[in-house]
Length: 285
Length: 348
Image (cartoon, rainbow over the protein chains, first blue to last red):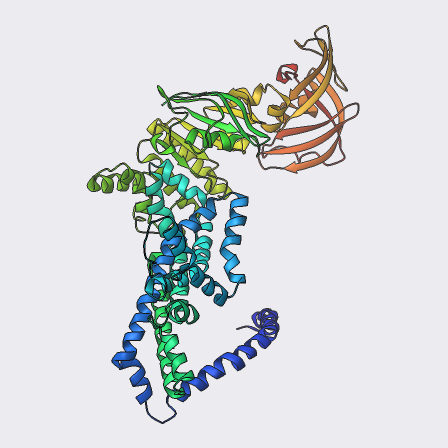
């Protein structure tokens, strides 16, 4: 590099250093309160000098079943969220100003209430003598209360409710970036609304779909409060298992090993989706 | 096919975008709608394409009334301002799109796509994505996609706006040649008067939701029907004269014998109609002036003049290499013109 080029690069580098300095407090905070405890915890899983705890967490049939269950539930939640969220996101891009404001408000409102409150609300709604069962009985549709709570269905309803915004927002953002002239062009060239959507809009929104799925799946995988309360002990997810190890069995090393397995699976999912969106046409235009 | 618009009205809330547009485009004709932004020309194009439903009026394409027909059943090809190529589809897939929508067999699609891409000189680019092409290439893909299915009508929405000047000129001629060869009825939208003059069989000048004048490029240039048209197309000197008994009094130039009704009159004098010095000696109308500004344009020189008695004038004087140096700023010159070069702009 000639000295003149070096002169020109210097201000850019100084600018970068100033920005780094400004970001430093947040980075330190993360390091101190997140990275450090996670490393401490993970190191606990191998505190006896062997990989025995990790091996048990990853391969013991009992725990493997819980892990697979967790993956299955996270997958179902993701699928349900996707089916519910896509139409909502599509509607938001076409909604009037008032519709958009109301839709966004309804979507973001749950963010301002605690997960605990929302989960208890579902218990009030879905319980044996809950609002839904009482209504159905009053209308004479059922004789005995339906088991809506303390089963997989109840857990799914609660988790989908909490996680829906994480699916809607990335898809909405992706749809918003699509030039409206593209749908017009497709229709002008002879496509029906449906075919214009399937050939043009849907493929162009796949980056948002992938982002939403990754977010929801990963969040669902580590979910604790909702499955614990709505599952009534009959639905066990891996986070509940970890909590049980710590609180009831005081087995910190094994809890740490389970955490390590959960973290590894999560990272794998992220990497998989990252590859999927980066390779080929799924990438944002 | 012939396109006939009658009484098209479109309102957006309190804004009237189209205030009753009547326009006929003959079969195989290249008609340009020329107007400033906000004149309603884009709304008109959207109504013809089927993207906006007019509040009133009728759109006929050939023998068919298509006023309420869905866009996809109109069989109209359109090149959008930003081309609207599908970014996730290759060049070949983009061009094949309208044929696939018409459920044409695969083998025929392959053949026709290759043909269409060869026509726009993009053979070999089949597998590229739009973002891997230059602006001019994207424009040609959009054109191929708009004509491959043999549309009844071709719509062009300012397709040259984003291109640099050299490329724009060559593409204008290319589009013109393709349109002539396919005998495609074409409606072209632009705010660029030069482009309109170069490309069109006829020009419709639009302002405030109404068509002001329809005519050949020469007609709208030489005989504008209003001050707006005179100002919008080309450069113009508009002289305010007072007429009495067939004689129009122009400040500084004296009386001109013109067929004008008594009262105030607006006269159009194109910059190239003005003569200077020796050429002005023989002109019937003469005045003394000072050169305020000269702009060298290569083929000609543009001068801004202030006449002693009257208005400022814009003159464009052709240059030949042997000519003496153009007038210096501040020089005094004799300026003149012939009355037959004057066009009386109708008032109203």
